[in-house]
Image 1 (cartoon, helix red, strand yellow):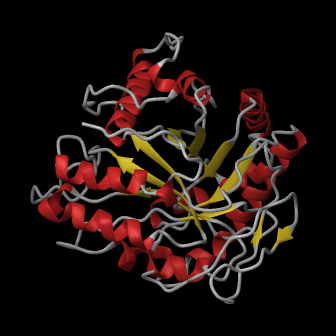
Image 2: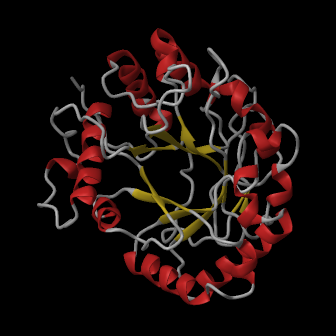
Amino acid sequence: MVKGRSRAVGAMVLAAVLTLPGCDGGSKTPKIQTTVRPGVAPTPPTKGAYFGAWVDPARDGSGSPAPSGSPSASASPSKTASPSERARVDAVTGFERDMGRRLDIVAAYRSWKQRLPQDSDAELLSEGRYLLVTWSGTDTREIVAGEHDDHIRQQARAVKSLGKPVFLRWQSGMDADKVRDRVHSAGDFTAAWRHLREIFRREKADNVAWVWSPTAGGFRGGEAEAFYPGDDQVDWIAAEVYPGGTYDYRDFSEAARFFMDWADERPKPIMIPEFGVPRSYGERRAEWLRKTATYLQDPQVKAVVYYDSDEGGADESGERRYEYSTAGDRTALSALRELATTPYFNPRNLPVTAGE
């Protein structure tokens, strides 16, 4: 392992910590703590890590057949009415064809006022996937003052009505300067987080696992840690990890190092809710993905989610430093498929096809 953190992860139970015997020759087994109900909300796999993706609805699918044994291959006609929602479902299943397997996690992005969930969320969940919702926040002080309680209750009831496991990542990147005008401070954020979660608890939205996700760069200078609401309030710890647009080439391990070092001291499973290799890396994209696949086979890493989109576009010089989709790049696509079909990242042993 690149980091040398050789550990085995114990099973998770409600409001408890279980430690299983180590399988690494006697090194300390990490303790993993959760507040969720196993079988109701998402809990980590005992071994390995879930593989998921955000797939841009505009992605050009491969048109190859759906993975054998995948519900996508035989799903009933969609009941999704909106063309944009239909496009999202088609993009996800097209990406799965490229990967040769169904996703464990499908990601979604929702604004504060946007309805949770959308029709496409329900459809994708019906085929055995978990949902990761990144929900943008509003003014933290307004939340604490109770100004949004009715809206929060409606959202909690809607998520509960799904009856399926949901990861909820509220106000990701809360430590970034660009959201300071509505986040205000670490104290305001943690108070809002607790208020939000308490309303979900009262509404018995027990199918939600709470994912805390600051910026990876926030750990370099120690700013991100102040926004942590506490072990009793967080189920998964996470950080988006991109190599950064100022580098001609930079390994995932370099970008992730400070977050991973901090996470090593926390009794929580790690999620990488967004990661991607820029198109500007050209022929080195496959190398980057293979190194990343090795690095992420860490016993505390329990979910990884690829950001398959070119939405960020090129930088001012025209370099494609913020385009991460693997569509149209057969070499990068093959390397990502290798990651997705590695047994570590297929803990549910989902059917895998040979692909194109």
